[in-house]
Image (tube, rainbow, N blue to C red; front, side, top):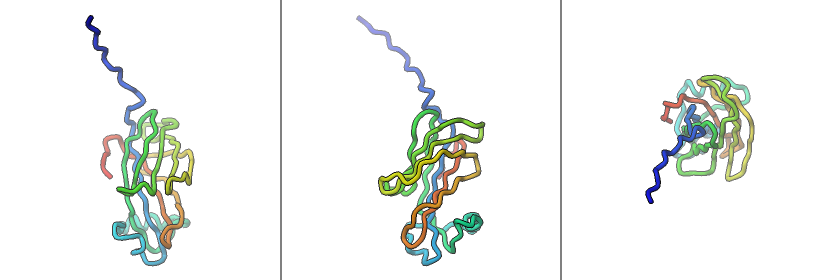
Length: 155
């Protein structure tokens, strides 16, 4: 008896509708070296942009890490912005598609395996959502979550 091979149906839930980029910054008014050796200086433009928000105004900013992951139509997605560490994780999934350039997502931030934030946010290309995170090493973490086109696989 020979069984026919059935073609696997494509799973529309796995369609990539965009990428989500997560960046984690350390902000401090003290010595920026406390962020660690791997923390990179941010551009003057990024520092001005962050400092322009009153709640995020600090003297020094360092980039701790970034990650870009595909945003699937119907599946949860995880980003790990600090390479090799699960200290900070970001979980997100589509709640609704608002337009070609924007989506509403369910966003969760995890710190040390504990959920510290759960929120529904609207992401639009080129307009990051900023979250003032917890105190860390004499400063504060700032998490930026932004929507990028599906073709953008860079970090």
